[in-house]
Image (tube, rainbow, N blue to C red; front, top):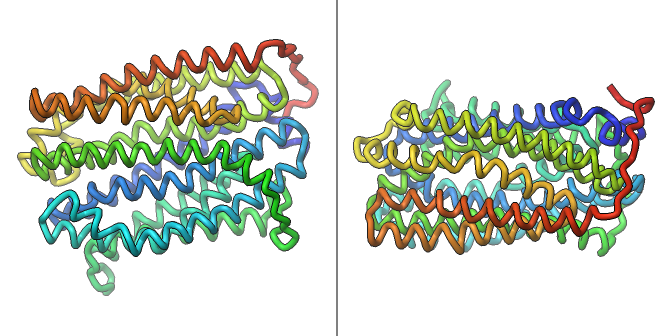
Length: 461
């Protein structure tokens, strides 16, 4: 346990961040790849299937919000308790995380019998699109246990500083999905062609494989925290500590679903192709954003640990290195979207209508990437310090206060091409807000901290 602790408290920060973040970045890029591959295969079933997948995406974001919020709450609490040298509380937090995961899964199952058909019928009257959407999302929701329990375990490991096993877990799911997709969708190797149902089954089957790997890593191979669910004792205080960080993070993720739902409603007023373009954009942008999320996963436990240890210099250095890395990646992403929008759209068998809409959309939205990178890293700092509600406030302002009203206004008075400029307006406001909040938090939380010398003799290579 000491070695795992000392690594986050003593190893040179650039090296530590690279060691912590690289496995998460690799895993997230593979995750992004399988999201894109999923849509590429589905697009071969027709634009209706691709539109259904785009409309289903907000519901998937809600599901993601559940387990990402839980994961951030676990990761933050485990890392902070380890920074305080309280191993028992860190272990307790990890065990409670799995119990909360079970409760969240039951909620998702209940919603699977209520939401899908009503949701899709609210956007479009094409019966084929509605049928495709209901088939896909119902399966994904009913069998979401693999993803949510895998995320709980991944977050436990990340909170202890273990990043390689989480990377392997995510890669198991991603690679499994990419292999199963064409087999189940198109009926390869004698398997019946299941169409869009096959895409959903491939997704949940791959998530199940990821969960099995996580359980094996935690309960068989053993990690630095020795979990024992048989001796579990419920503690309301620990649940509250996880929820205080996790719920704002979940709401923040859910705001993305509300935003995307609103944008789909606005774009559906123009055409189904516009909705499909937005869905394609979010799948492709994940290639740029997922490495930043991976970087954040590596940054969060470092910041959380050193915040718990009251080591200001290491905490701020980790954020500085993370910000430089994030902006560099995002600038590269902007260049790709500016110069190669046509090849990107062709990956999805895009119709002429989609091409006409998509090129302008990609070029316009991609200007926000560097600003978004800064916002994501600083929001991670809020979560690591136990102040996730600030990230939620920023997301609320950016997505609901600015983005949706601006998109509606621009679309109504200036047409479809103007809708995409709402992304730029919202990101400018969001970045300004997060910078002001971060400055305030640093002044209030870190004032009076004594700089601590680096313990070179304890450094873990």
